[in-house]
Length: 196
Ligand SMILES: NC(=O)c1ccc[n+]([C@@H]2O[C@H](COP(=O)([O-])OP(=O)(O)OC[C@H]3O[C@@H](n4cnc5c(N)ncnc54)[C@H](OP(=O)(O)O)[C@@H]3O)[C@@H](O)[C@H]2O)c1
Image (cartoon, rainbow, N blue to C red; front, side):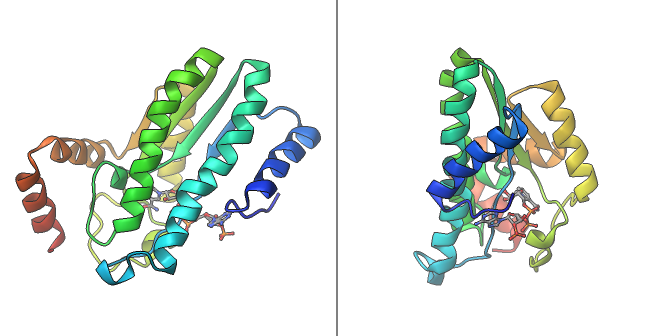
């Protein structure tokens, strides 16, 4: 069923329609996202605002109605597609990193409430996956994987049920470790590896 995630009312109606026509949502994978390579000139511009509107507000517009529906049943599973780019700020990803960091923090915070309601919340943090979103990148993308491989990792993660589904592991762990370092080392390492 098509719809624009930035339309709050339409998303509420869409969840109701899906449940009416197909039955209760058992698993919702909130995959929507957009990315514009940005620079300091773009701060607050159209691409910047669209990134927040789609990635953050769009996901929130679906989580609200889904949680309300699942809460009544005392069960359900919601997975949010963030990114390893949300672990910390990356060059040319000012809005994207910020929107994905917000999604990570939101899922962490939500887990405390949803666990008590019997709803499983999961965070998906992919590295680089070859899709139209990354086809516009003009920089090297380490450990780039196919959509098929990413899809398999995500489905395995749904079945396994842990909080975070992060892949490829070497990319996710490398970024997690870099983000634990003191800021001067973080900025030096990220700057050197991205040529910034
Ligand atoms: N590719 C990567 O390396 C990578 C890495 C980490 C995380 N992610 C995340 O993975 C998710 C999927 O990304 P992707 O690489 O598959 O990107 P993509 O190829 O650009 O696909 C984005 C999807 O979002 C939909 N979409 C965009 N704006 C929308 C809106 N306002 N309302 C409804 N749907 C909308 C698009 O639908 P239409 O085609 O109909 O516009 C499309 O299906 C995103 O959340 C992205 O941030 C991707």
